[in-house]
Image 1: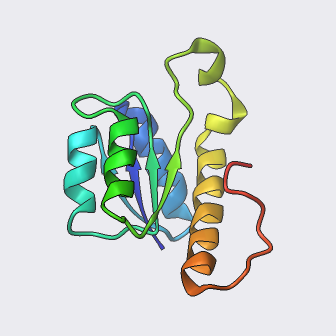
Image 2: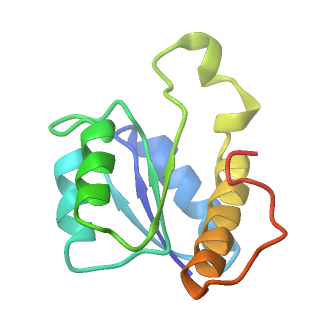
Length: 124
């Protein structure tokens, strides 16, 4: 499995990437929306873990651009961390993001093969 983590906070991005790599997942990191679009042009990731509040190109626009272009990978929108009450939420922890990324990839693989999955939705 190959994942692109798009997060402008370097420490958080590297923490998420480290947790995913421990599970044997190949991870690339982009720190802004423009870099995310540049990385997804030549490479199809199984999952793109995408922050919303990104510099240069907002995460919502990255998501719309990927969808409009028929991007074949799954896109997992990360919860925004600009609100202090959400920055400590267990749902935005690196371990939670790892499990959500893995589930999203499994669901995407099943749907792309036309088979049904017994996996819960990617968000939790």
